[in-house]
Length: 70
Image 1: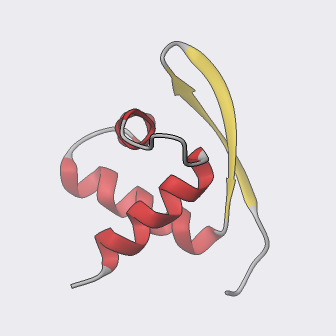
Image 2: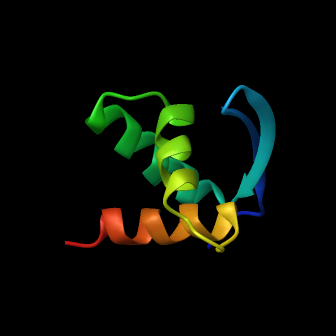
């Protein structure tokens, strides 16, 4: 991957939290949010709700991989 981690702040359940992901994963999450007509925070909140015991950053990476796979 081309870059290091990029940190962004998102609002989850009324609380600000920061999330660090590689830019390539952020690009897929941004695209998914746009295509699904939701905010990035809304998309990440949905990922958060379904992640179980998995770390949020890991759940976001898995989502991005599944989203970008045909």
